[in-house]
Length: 177
Image (cartoon, rainbow, N blue to C red; front, side):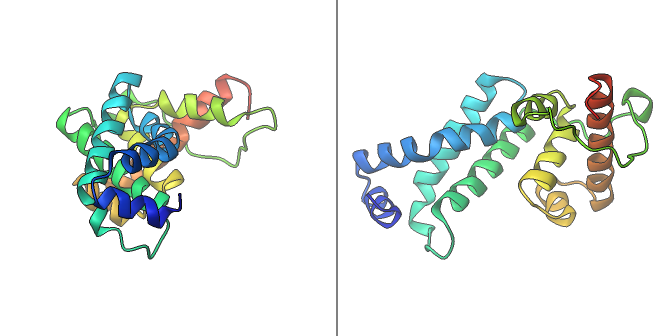
């Protein structure tokens, strides 16, 4: 079934089309949710809320971009909404409380695997992790991040810089850099 047929079936509220859409994209979207969540259960909730929103808004998909990209944007937005509802985002982390160093030119070693890096990202404080995911992985600008999260653009840049420094410290402690 093509994406267009899936969308048409979902607009018609066809359960088999909805199931197929979920099966086709849920695994990738769970990866997105896991990058924002503190726990797997929280990621499950984010994924479920994201797909509920997808099915509610499916008639607004115009086909101008990829269906996967459209779904990803909804899932990211729902993940952020979940974080805001749980008041888990701590953007004003005390500088003394965060391990911070000026970013250098260190690079991840050849031995570093994607899963290892994602695990380290998952260990970042929530505010750091959220901004890092949005900027470095999802491709949002600092202005867009600021608007989405209700923070200043400078706070977004600062959180991203601190997240990178924190990751570099983690890599250094693992002797990977």
